[in-house]
Length: 185
Image (cartoon, rainbow, N blue to C red; front, side):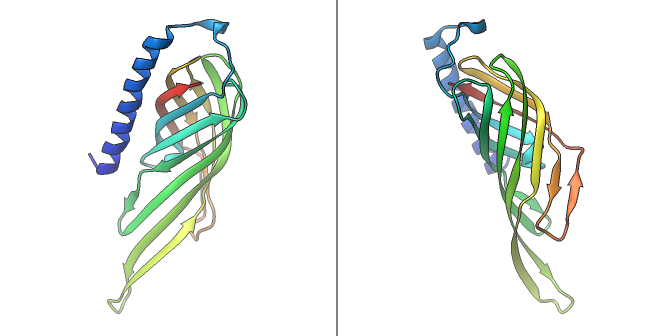
């Protein structure tokens, strides 16, 4: 396992153990008996989706109390090595969740700020070092399984991307993603 993947996995395990200890303190409440007095938040590891081919660690929060309504998510993606190019990227999205219940529809849009550096050798055997910033647009529509208070968050969604700001402009509409993490109020 790569060092970044080990780090993300360790963070996930730490959050999962914290969740277990909090669940023992809070007890178990079901249905609508859980007051929505604070903003819902989640920390999760995402695979594929707006993280590209790798993994990302994300923080998601609603702007108002409860799970329903508008919010944002921001994350850091696993660095991706493609040949002689290395990419560091950060997804930033505005999203909305349509329900305070355990299962809800989520939709959002934003961009991925990507910094890429690469080297290449020209015909005269001179090595060139380049770098640049790309900002692919991304959207997501999918289902979100969320706790009423503290617990596991699982997301499964469609995430089309549009690459802009580079010479390789393209659209990828066949892109799906999933994420797993801890939700809390």
